[in-house]
Image 1 (cartoon, one colour):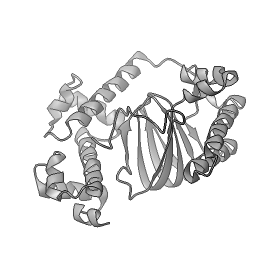
Image 2: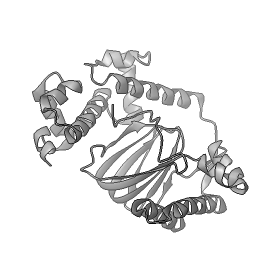
Image 3: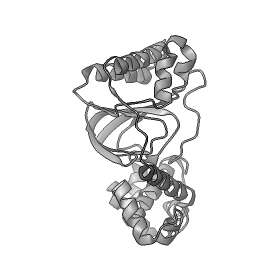
Length: 282
């Protein structure tokens, strides 16, 4: 998939300044944050509406003004409702290169000796203020903004350590770790094969489960059925192609695993609230 990179392995920003900024509203072709993971870290801030976040298999709801911190390697997704949100994805290693005095603190994060809180709301005004300044700098890109971004990140980490806004890392239970790896495996299988007419049996076989057990496992982990998740992925990719190519709706439907145009239109409307034709004109 071109924009649905479940295992996102690509450069962020530049080598010297590895920070990538995204502003996402309901018109964005990747409005729903599909399950994915990356070795980089991520900060998300909610500008309006609600955002239901899942980190590995833990879900919670974030609302306007909240900040979410996503650690490296965490499988995560987000379902927005009337939501506008922004993300900064960044390589933590840049902070190991810049200042040897601070490196010991950063290594505690990188080595997962500590886990920074994943959800900051209005109980943490000090963090919210810093993160808002950080996002403003990334969005406006005024001369010298790189200095502001690096400085605000150091300020954020300083507040985290100074106020103990972290948990001492605990090893995952073997069962939990295995379940997360299995979910990553099936998500990757869907990413590679979404354009084919996949069956429930094929999905369950990708993680060596029976279809019945697989359905229960997948629903417990993602709060949706396997086929619902597959169709969401197909529709998200179709949205991207409608926005960026001049290809016909029929070609896009067939290219994304739909062998019946009327079924594609019904499915598209189910998830997007409009038809592919109207979406293409918006």
